[in-house]
Each structure stands twice: as C-alpha cells, then as structure tokens.
Length: 561
Image (cartoon, rainbow, N blue to C red; front, side):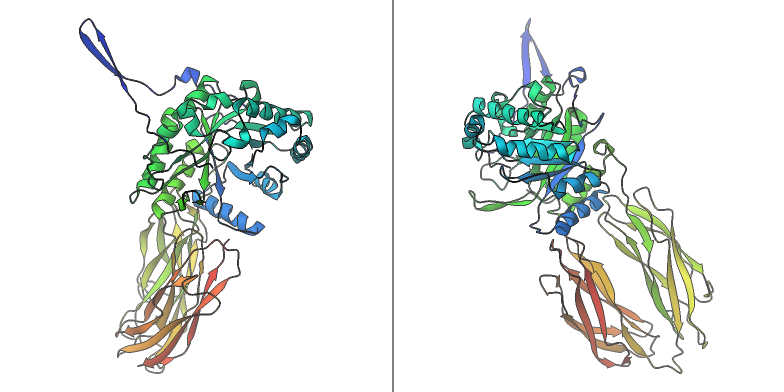
C-alpha cells in the first residue's frame, strides 16, 4: 500500500452533438464491449472473480496467523481463493504460509518488495533473485508473484528510478526465474489505480509478453485523508479495467479498501462495489482486500481498512464472499445449527420456565431459520411440560437464541424426567449440527426440600471482531412462595477486566414467587492474541428466603485465535 495523492472523482460526461439544428444527447457507455473483454492467462477463472485478502492484526505466532485467516473464512463461509503475503526484497520465500495456503486449497500470492532498479540492472542482486527463483521452482505449486508493486507511488518511486529502469529490472528478474525453471510463478504487474487515472501507468508496463496479470491497488481514502473525495469502485478502477480489456488481460485489485464516513456507508460501498464488478467489469478476475488498520506516519493517523470495522461492514463483506460470482473454486462452508442442553426444576404450584440455547456455529449475513420442537423421553408432554413446535430465527450476525419451555407444576415426589429439544429443517444458509438437546427436569418438593440457589458455569468464544455477550444463569431448585434475593459479584480469575471482559460487576437478583431463574450478562471483548483460555467468576452471597447451594459459577472465555 502506498500513500498516493487522493484520487479525483472522474466525471462521467454527456456528449452533446449538434446536427442540422438538432441536439442529440447520449451518455458515454463505460461498459466494455463483451467481445473485447476476453481475459486469458494462468489462474484465471472461467467466469467470475477470485476472492482474496491480506489480514494483519499484529499476531506473532503460526497459530495466531492461521486463526486470523480461519476466522475470516468461517465468517464468509468458504476458503479464500488468494491470501497475500508481503516480503522485503532480501527475505527468503516461500515459507510455511504458502505451503499452508496450498494445503487449504488457496492460491498464495507473494508481494515481493522491490529495490533500487539500477542495482538490479547492474546485476548486483542476481544471486538473491536466483535463490528466490530456485525456492519458488522447488515449491512446485502455482503462485502469484507480485514483484515491486506500486512502483509509480510515492514510497517506491525513488527506488524505481524511472519507467525505463523499472521495465528493464522487471524483465531481468522474470528472465532469471524462467532460467531457473520457476515457471510456476504467475507474474502480476501492479501500479496504483491513480497511475491509471492519470494516464501514467502505461509507461511502467513491461509489455504483454512479460505480464500475466494486470493489477492496480486502489483505496477510497475519504474521509480520513485531508481533501480526499468519496470514490466508488468504478471511480477507482475503471481506467485500470479499460487498460486490461485493451490487452485481453485479467485484472486484479491487488489491494483495496474503504473507510467509514457515515454510519453504514462502508457497508453500502461494499455492496455497490460487488455489484459494479458483476455488472460492468468482466476482466476484474481477482480482488484482494487489504484487511488492516494501518498507521500512516506521514499523516499521523490510522486508516481503518479492516473489513469488520463495524458489524454492518462485516455483514456486507460476508455477502460479498458468499456471492456465487466471487466463489469460483469451491462450495460454501455453511454454519451449523445445534440445540444445547438445559436443566429445569419442577415447581409445586406456579409453572416455571427453562431456557434452551439454540446456537449457530458462525455468524451469517442472512437470516437463518430452523424449526424447534420438543420430544418426550421420560417426561410426558402436556403433563410435565408445554409442547413447543416453532420456527426460530437468527438475525444477521446473531449466533445464539433461547427457546423457553414452560414446565408444569405438580406436588408429586418423583424422579428426574427428561425431554429432547430437536432442531430440523434449517434454511438454505445453514446446515444441521447437533440436532437434539436434552432437558432434565429435577423434582424437588418444596414441602420437604428447602429453596436453594445455584450459579451455573458457561463458556463463550472470545472472537476477534466484535463484542460478544455471555450469561451466567442463577436459578432456584424450585419455586418459592416468598421473594428470594441474592447478591452477586463478578471478579477476574485469569481474564482481565476491561481488556478481556466488561460490564456491571455486582448487583442483586430478586426472584418473585413463580420465578426460578435469572441471568447475569458479561460483555466479552475481542482480541487477536494467541493465548490460553481465561475465566471470570460470579460469586453469590447474602441470600434471603433461600440458602446458597452453589456459591460460584465460572465463565470460560475460549481463545479461538
């Protein structure tokens, strides 16, 4: 990524022709002639667009990096087609990243930084180039080689020297790779989109015979960059696309990103960009997101290109990744719907309620629906509980809902009884996971058993994108004829407050007659650290109207990096 001048908005004009005193007006059609939009080359999909990303969150371990990619893939419900990897000129490659990409069905892209092209043309770096070529050859799998990207941009312009020097260096590097037998490298030539808009990019072009893919890096810098105007995908990439069409080359957006202006506008930008590519950019054969919050030291500010900077932008990105036009190499990996277990207590007079969790393994950009029904095991329908047969919906981004089952009160002294909660017929955006949850109804006759209070344990995935909510359930073993209250307090065990979790740290729960459970919410904060699981404890004290049977519950924050 380079900090090039902010892009102008290209005005789409109207041509006014005066003929025989008549004025004929017609809009210039920016859509290329389909007959001229042939795109040929290696790794080019027959139709549609490859979908890839560079993801950076300051992780330092192998598992941490893998966690970044896998979490994003779980969100988009598929494997990335391309994952980008940056290397300084003197660093060796390929490394484990590229091997893992191939193992997972992706195409690795090596963004290899350039150096002084005059030195390359003198042969000063031939040994380094040859060793990299041998390593790529021995890697044995096709990969994208994006050497010296943004040669026309502000940071690289000085070491690129001149268009003539750059072209000579490009051809020298490529010829060394060919001589070494590294024919599995697919060469991606990538100036800035600004260079295409200004008409300067062509002077840096090494020629059709020496370039496999045309590429451009383009960003919508407004409103963070001073003076930058808001730009659409078409504004940024139209000239680059026209250049690729004229040469029958595939076009790659090697880096792209947008910033949030008004609430929801980044998400709308994503949706509009996706539709623009599908409708009018047939040669746009790959897009690789720049998924990073980047510090621009020369401007003394961050530019947040993260695709999950807001929940709405993440939902739009998920829609983009799941669009069949951008899914050319494999099926969707749909989230699974599962039913959880729950425990309830049978009361003597009032009918208590038990809440059964229904979970989605990953968030979806679509509304997910599933049928939920009760199935008797040893508990009798209508006699021990009120049957449930309903459709439950997960709104976009939601991964847990609860289904309440009303238990029937009786004064019989009897053994625990059970029923199943079954999930079935999920909508097209999900598949079935654990299709049955177990509800255990424990009988404790209040005539012979005192009212007791219990604190539950729970667990929640930490996540790396947005806050999640976990809940402790505090319950009575059966209904009380009088009001019950209990004090509660949250404390850190190994989790750190305001770093790993947040929220109210203490309070009082009050159970009115007929109520037998309450919940305490904990906000779980995201991070990208690769770390051990962490815990938060809820402690109960000072009960009135009941005794405390279980004084503490443990919330385990499961690290998923």
